[in-house]
Length: 90
Image (cartoon, rainbow, N blue to C red):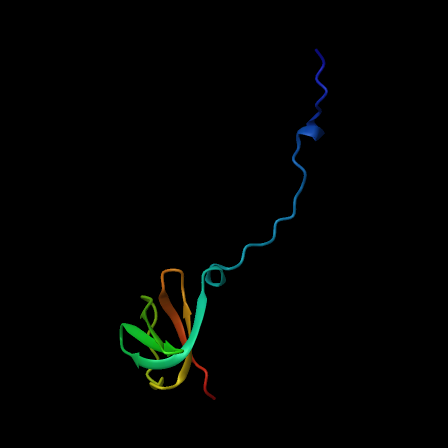
């Protein structure tokens, strides 16, 4: 019995795979709202009359310059831990 398959036929064709995104961009979500309260462990924002509370990640230290009532953007990781809080007012 003669084999019709050669080594070249067994090789898989080269396929292009896009480079994976960095880990911090794969899972981050951002939320915007009015800062209601902030302390050492959590932050509360309100948007369209709905308040949401988020806990800080273990490596995040809150910015003491943030003032309640100001507009902020939260970057939250996949575990709903705050990675950053940015003021939207100039």
